[in-house]
Image (cartoon, rainbow, N blue to C red; front, side, top):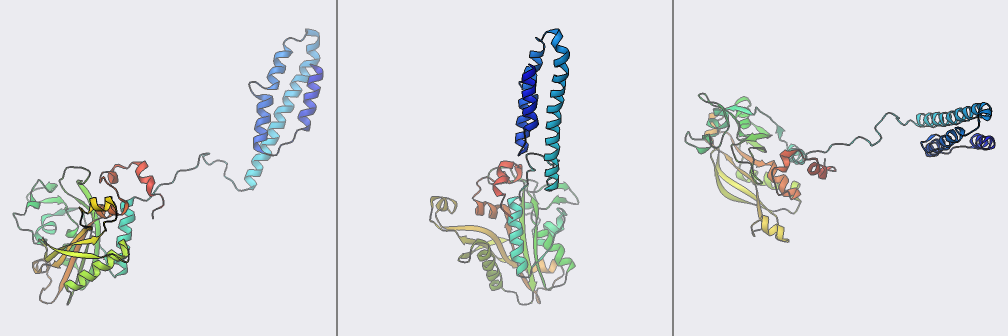
Length: 338
């Protein structure tokens, strides 16, 4: 055993390390549960008593030599890491990064397009009174949207409710601003609907308003065509179909031509190639009057779109509920989006 200790001592003294991995391998080989020092300790128990006085100090000295060698190598490795500027306290697995929500990605892009056209961003409260949600927008008292089945009421008489559209911000801005005005109004809205793949009780809208002297329907069409080509592509075509909204007259719904190249295209466009993206129209004179604007002098247009619908079209998302569940597996798919 004496000869073995002398041989191992010479090997330990001669060993050098090129990396932290080699230091760890050396430590396990000599100090591990199945290491050489463990075997020497087991062998020492069988040594005759007369020899233990000589071999005991040699064995302890060898153990201290190995421990000192490991500590010296680990210290040198740590100092090298510090010199390189690496943070030794950071988690070994790295810190996972978050992602931008697809609704916010699309919202920022839409707002940016209209800001480039001179629209300013305006926001308003989500808890509103009846006048700003319905009365000031030409909704008649018997309109079904005022019913409990469609609206979340906080209080009754006087009515306080969660806004059902961001058009309420239009009324507030028309009351406090003097024309001309060119505004874009993003925000959350709420409706009393059953949650499903195609509907939700909360969603996001962006509405626009432009009021000035001599504003025409042609201005509205050109503005929306420019938006569609910026968002969907430079070759995008749009069409306007007659529709009805209480606060605009005339009113229209806007479709973009999506195409019929694939089976998915045929399914989502119902075989027509066209997809509805928003509603719009010329601001009703009664709405202008209610906000103190003379309709004989000023005219304007308004439009509104659902951000969820636009986002579902862009990313081919089939279930509206994914936007609100906070599922990391869903959100990680948009890691590269800004």
